[in-house]
Image (cartoon, rainbow, N blue to C red):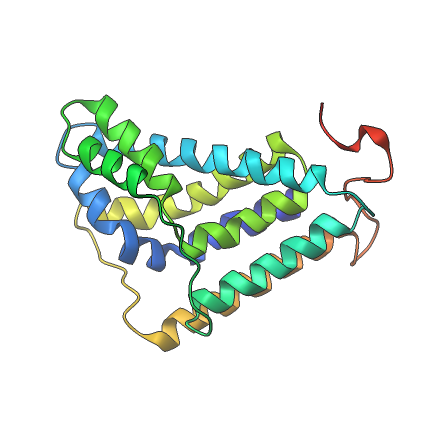
Length: 216
């Protein structure tokens, strides 16, 4: 599991410029209240954990050989990395109710509102988040999948926090820069998934041939 967690963290860390471009304004808005930025980060990581658990369960529920979750995760990673690089349309998911809820929470008083806004923020469509979910699919376990997404979110903390308090701005303005970031994330992700799936040595993958493979 360690290679996948390392890959998830690198995806978050190296993809931080994309995060700042997409969510830097949210981080800045939440930082105006004392403790608001921390509450937003906690909410965002909670949202990621929920998504990771669902992706991990999906990977575990797949029938077939043990390498199937890793193979499917690699397909997802290639697809979303290509979208991040501008080579394919980035998949979007229309969630108008969630957007309205997030807007209400962003303007709401108290740290609880910032926390809930962070949770909603975690569910907003984002190609980088979709890419990171491939790690959870490869892990094929809800708890491990949730942990992978929390680790991914931890990788985004430094740049988003720095942008929020005005120390620096890391923006993806150049398509070339986006493609470089996407390529790095893709290489790190595929390497991690390959190690997890046993393509570089002994397999540590999930055994789908056993009835106990699917969580009950």
